[in-house]
Image 1 (tube, rainbow, N blue to C red):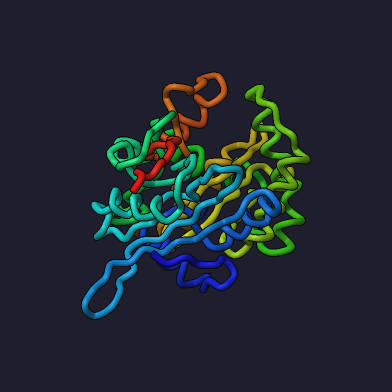
Image 2 (cartoon, one colour):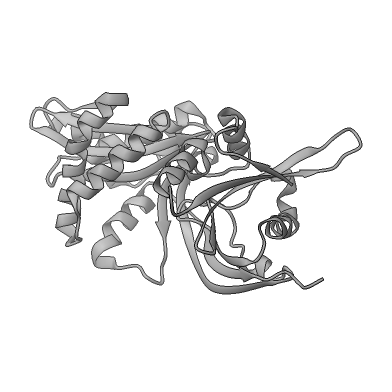
Length: 328
């Protein structure tokens, strides 16, 4: 076990390992910096690296980050374990807990692409699992198709129709990618689109608060954030705000104007194409779905849109637990 400081860490080495482990963008170094900044004075971010001892030298097999404060520790995106050592999750977790010590813990995240872990955690000596929530990460596994064209042929007929004829229906339709300071300048247009989408669903949305949040993460994580807007002669019609981390493209937020003539589907079509072009083994990660709390009136359209794009449901979980090491 090796403790690391956030600011003595080699960013590229940390991110490369997280990507090899299949972690989400919330495991990235930049994301950890954003969490550290938000928690100054209240929380601290601790980093741990776990290795196996070999005759030829130690071999790193896992890493993790915890956000700690007020006696509670939250794993940021879970344990990041190399694929060939996934079966050692209980042993690695036990080693991490022994290093951190007694306390309350939270595990899992809304983008965390790994199997449910609460049953494995409950078998670790000293662990008592509290609340556990099973849900799904919905993503398009693009590696299932030999080409992007073969993938797109399998999406719903209505989606292919809308995206195909959008350029004919919508004068001046074009996609524009924004980065750096230009991204900050374009964020108000995107927040307006998202506010319009939420308003139609009857969901409260503070445009000012969300705009500030997008700007904060956009600045700190600028090298992996993606902002693409669908422009037309009539103005900005749809938007995509996501993150590229390793092979995977994450669809974090979206928004669209009503009556956009299929511009939103044209945008999503091109984003799936972009993901495939970058890496044919990419996953286009669209968010999570919890059937126990699903509200059809608010989220039914989003769920149908994901299924129209042929998402798979990957089970995962979030849970709380306490750890009390046995007395020696």
